[in-house]
Length: 132
Image (cartoon, rainbow, N blue to C red):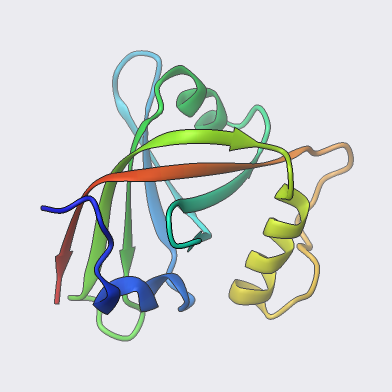
């Protein structure tokens, strides 16, 4: 296992491939959520809203795992164990809009709730495994 995402699997971050993000609950049990995801060349990035379960979990324990499965070949995937190295509000609204464009084909994220504050989690890969 390497801490780098191989070039041959980076296309999964460009495709409409949903991520499955695993975080750790307060009681130590795992919690998994389907998420929109991208990769900026250094960090795997996930966008959420403040105060959701995954938000509370990563603030308490930054160790996470995320898997992206190729929508064109379900036997091909990339799995990343990592650490949330940065949590930021900066650029989070633009980021969720870019993800909405990728996943929904819409310029603006349509699921925004009144008063919702968006946040980006920047995940530094610690180990990466692939299949396919």
